[in-house]
Length: 501
Image (cartoon, rainbow, N blue to C red; front, side, top):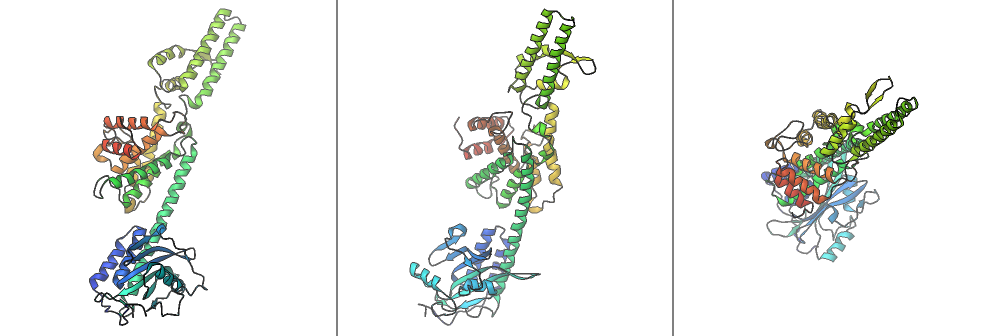
């Protein structure tokens, strides 16, 4: 008989308030891992158990998910548990937990050292290693009853019931009279099933979102990592903020807000799915128009040769015209790719804007049309005003698309956090010109991450990747101009190994 074990059992009258406390504890947890720990902890409390384990069935095996032992001060969860899974092969009926799961049966053992029903070599070996003494044992299947019949989700194994009055280890006795413990196990199983189902729905949602964002990013080889980068940066920054601030601080992201932040970051550019690729991937000022411009310059040179051969131009006039056209084309090729267009270059371009040629209708027209000149007059960047407006329209479309999704209360902030990532605190952003008091912290974080990745990305054809320290300087400058949140910018710089200066 186990040392100090008292055979009489203990008074199992249950406090109704305590039972309600357990049920409410099961129902109040939304985090799956926390729920597992809560189920085992509360079941240990209600049965006055000294130790316990919780197993979950995955791929035909019982996996340890929680192990607790009050006497030994052990509380391990998930990857902390270095124990192999238990096979649920029907031949493995000598293992009490496997038997419970396979047969959907509650098993009560008064003393594992006296019982011959199961193979308790494992608990006995554990006792030898730790000095613990395993005596009474109770295993309960976590059964979810559904239309197709009962489904065992896992097993709770409880060890060493303790008489609260004497502190002695006692048998679990008849747990069916009253049937509180089996009933609570059923409630735990129902709650666990709901949590698993919710996780499956979330995973399905994430899968659809991933497909959408991957489809969008795959359209462009020049920004294929942007969505993933922004999502990763937002997640890392939120974790940094959570380590810095208490749960009641505005910068703290609880579990729900952290999920919303990641989903909003994944969807922040979803409107680009219809943005013309020639605008998204425009590498220089003329873009696809460059080939047309080059073709016109070639026609102009040929027409000059023809005019000379027909005697309409002298040799000197011909040579001067060819030299002027060649200089103009070289100048335009340079202007097309230069990062910043100076006032001098803008003025010089005026003399080339009057070059004419004969089009396919025989009409004399300017070689560089109005659209070409608009593009070549862009001071910085590669987009014309019209193209920039089309690009900015992706934010409006992002909002419009997300407004059609029935985000339930859990994800209610996702549409606004995603659509507001180009808004600035001073109202100068787009598309709605919102002010600081209209922008949530989630939007502010996505905005900072979006700008930082755009500045430092190495896959943009129209701009070299900016060193991290210079990008930090840009963020600080924008914060100084009242566009970005100064405190969040400083925290962001710190979170990414910021610099002095």
